[in-house]
Length: 318
Image (cartoon, rainbow, N blue to C red):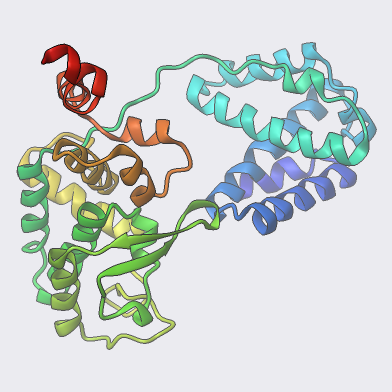
């Protein structure tokens, strides 16, 4: 936040007010998460501060409407020159474009110079799910790391929810006492405030029940279901820490993160013959292409599914 505050000194009052209004719009009407809002704020404030430095004056709304293609190229060059990678620059440009679409509609100017800027190309990093035996080993390992049995049970329960229900770590940690005991399904509010119904496997339900049976903090309806040692809500960093320790104990690669357990959920379901559309719903993805990227199933496996399911393929093979 210190960086954002310093940048704000270079931004005109009108531009700062516009940015805050846009951020409020993103949060209230589009349901953007707090981390997303913070990233937007940082990226757009950084852009506005650059334009002040580049053009020699704090950028009021009229000046922002006059930004040129040359200005955009100068900003992108500065970002790359300062060590910002292609993926990060693409994210920053996306935030700036989103802000400009909103600002142009509100102020009545043409944002072509900004919207026509092309993001640098980059190779998307495909997620690397864990093999089934490795996922099981991780859960067994975290269940033995602490000297406090209830902490072991807690960590095993969290990771079981990630692997067994495909939850994001933020979704698992947002569960409260009113969700206990877990039933056959969970109503999860994911990214963008979208709700989905997730089936709960008996193994996940039993794992959470085992944790609750020995947790020193009784479930409270409005309190976090998963508690830290001192009773506060468990943090994502703590879960990442136990996962890192287990990864080192088991000799797993650095890609074995809590989020990899969610990747594994999708991949293992698809490998077992699960429907990609159904998996999309379970994961809460808006796009099927995102779900496809989450699954790591070899091409031959997909071709086998195609050959077995497609009517034309069946006829030609008969």
